[in-house]
Length: 151
Image (cartoon, rainbow, N blue to C red; front, side):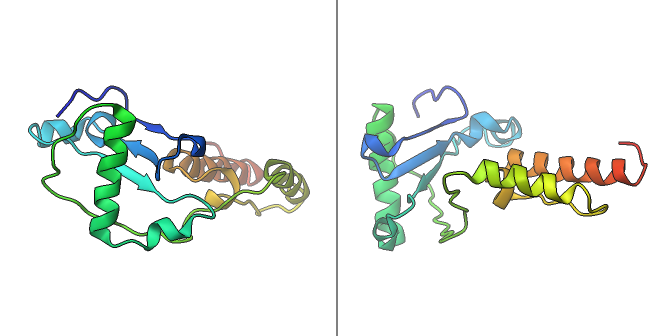
């Protein structure tokens, strides 16, 4: 396996690849190479808003497409995978429209007068796990402050 630097990358649509992101899980999570030193785990994310046809392929075709795209993006020949898992999340991620951040800011301003009410999650602050955790923590801290509790 070639040396993969960093924890992954995003691919803008103008590049023409079906892969929109990749995570080098073995780099991102320290426990993985410790537990599996001879295996490199790579996640590829495919499917863009409005391009549902690309995801209508079979699992095998999607896995082959991901490997082909990753080879083209990274510029190296990747070894054949020793295992593949295809997880389909159709419609699973929100697609924020223009003005989303302004609407969320207005929503939060409006609910400040309603003690005990907060909003959190991917629908508001970002779809990645860190963004969702931060959103939940922010809501919990705001609720605790409203109730007169400490962090």
